Length: 344
Image (cartoon, rainbow, N blue to C red; front, side, top):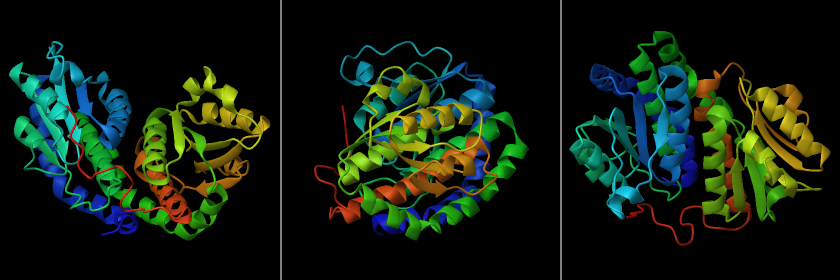
């Protein structure tokens, strides 16, 4: 499969995972609940680290668990791991092969903590190190840039949240995700027409907040690794604390701003950016905000905010793909990158 084909496979991947992983995830959730973790400690790198940012919000909001991101070098290089009392230790990795992520989970198990691997490789070192394993089942991903494995990781995180809370209403909402993704994919031609406008863009800011803080990071990563754009991700709150000074006439701002708890804050910031002359590319389901954008990308109506990152990332992936193609760059083999990255 090419990168383009893998982007388009995501609705089917999500549907397959919903059908095949629910029972196993419910069993894992029941076992975790019995051990009553007080907080969650996640080790991840790259795209998986962005999935972990989504987990911070979903598990924080709906499961009332503080979620922290590990500093793997404390485990792998300094050999001074923190005490993990009360933690559920989670490793998130598509390949499950990075030694530093494996070491965090292995240390969690040595300390007697419940450990969970979320991975696309159930035979990986990470899966072997963990007590519980969620195989996201995305199928082999051929392109270097992760797309379908990222959305499948988000789904696993969302499914685990509903299972931990025994929340049937939110679980039922997940069934509509493939339909929403399909609706966004239908805008592919329109997104392709937007990309040439940004062919000579060298830098930009990417804004999101709340659940879509993760989307801002993942979108910026895709533009960096594919199109070689210096794309800097920020929450709308952090952007006001200094970085907004870079905004001037024509400065490109990419934003993910669906309706929800953070919408008003995002809208206010984007209005301010527009008043300073910024060029706005906005992914949203709010028609008023889209009307302010130079390049609007409309989301389907009715997506619950907690599930919006599974959908908002798709137009971001398509834009990154088309921007890369229009710049004449290799969408399948970004320079200096390999599919499996092992860090110590």
